[in-house]
Image 1 (cartoon, rainbow, N blue to C red):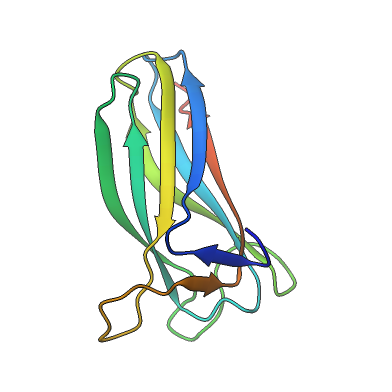
Image 2 (tube, rainbow, N blue to C red; image 1 turned 90 degrees about the vertical axis):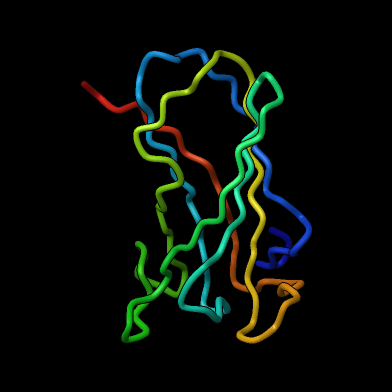
Length: 133
């Protein structure tokens, strides 16, 4: 993220080579925010492109603060690290390169157009963890 800003039309993209199609995996988004993040939640549009070209899209919502305004996530300062479930117990259907695209989809209440520059998001990462038997 440039200057802790996630622009509306600029996805965060990851390409991952998958060889293990027999095990279940948990996929997480690691989202780091700072004190400039102004909202209690975070909406994200996810897009996974499989090696055969098939596309899976979803809209995800995450709580970033509790009902009392306390920030969730780990960190002792104004920077919070959030490990957010993206896919739980997912089994990749085929070997090959998968492309993951994530777009921020925040809107102000009552407005149709999205927020062009979402402030306070410093990093977005993708983590894939094999579920141990």
